[in-house]
Length: 316
Length: 274
Image 1 (tube, rainbow over the protein chains, first blue to last red):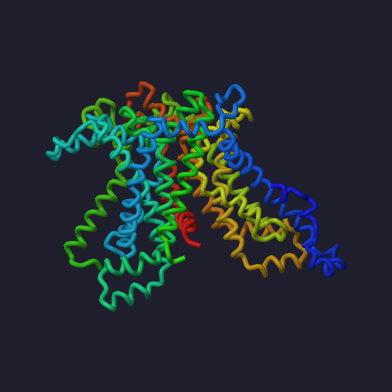
Image 2: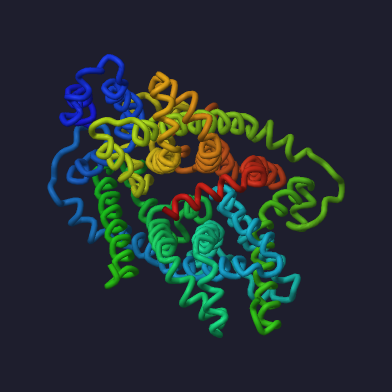
């Protein structure tokens, strides 16, 4: 910020170019360009600084305070974090986020397989490619409300099940602690798979088609082609899918949980974001909520880093 | 070609079933919205006995979906315009203007791409309250623009860098100013890239829920996602009207997807491939 705002830096001509510029300064637009660079970049930097960077700084500062949002925050050192690891509600919420993260392998392999089949021009591939992205087009709220309606005890899913003679499988999907979380997880996986299919398809189309062709001529099976030709070429896409699905499981579950079960029954589908939301806006514990936010941000960055290390391990 | 044939047909069947689930929400909302309340209570899925658009009218007027729809349009147009404008101007500064600190400023914006915005909800709410922006369109317009800025700027800079430098040099020699080059050369050349950004941002803004829930409390500014969700909790047992409202919420982006599929896919792929 300081460097960009500094008019001296912005207008100072390049030392090496000075001698040549001296003579035709009046006509050369390069000198005045520096000013324009700052002018064109500034609005973006200001908006980002105000609504992303400042809140992030605020989280770091307030994570170490007791703060109710009305009176001034008081510094309490690490006490928020000490409390965090004994807070049963927070730990239960975090455990549920970990459960959601267990879907990451499916979020990686299912779209990979589907993209491979579409890329092989399996019959109907155009239709599959088009329809699979639709779940990513629907608003998460719409999906959540629909899921809540569909999974009710007297809802369409149980009606369909009983009409095909599987009525015994019917249950109150969201009212039962043992099926509520898996239900949300299934919707979460389903809502995201098409997005990942598109990513994998983009990655596959960037792979030289002669490579899989050569492997096939050498007698490789389809699975071997996928495993030994496509997968190595898709490393970057796989990194992205791994990292984004893990981040999603820890930091983008709120809308699903809020609209489908509201965290219940009990705390069986409660997640960390919900805990942050409650602490901040229901219990007025804003400092504690900031500490949670900071802890999760650190956890996610660490996980992302570890995943990339594992995936590229030894080779870079 | 997948062999043996039974395996191939099994895979096609499974993939078709998945395709059906992807279309199902639309069909489910449509069939319910075209039926009466009584009809829906008897069977959640079925063909309408009498064709009626009454549920849409009830949703639009009584359930305020009409107001929410207009609010969503205002917020989306505002946020998308601001996002794209900020991305285009900053990307121009990074890709085509020579100035000190431009590499630093570029990465300074880029690093914020990875921040999960929801974890920032506490300070954002407090800041918006302090600025007096809660319950105004500006709160979400500014916030969405800021949150999407790193990705938008990244995409736009990559595009501007692909414009041949000779073209810019030639314009400079002809005496074109920095502003003229931006308005007359860069912007017209980047219409496909701008379209990609517009579609991508519109999808995000239209569907965003948590910050709209947090920052827009008053019915007069509430957007569709928040409005639809609170209908469920508000003693609202008129399911055909509720589902009609959700269909109204979904259709604009489905239509955008049908028309501009190419641009949307390009934005996603651009994030994954360098």
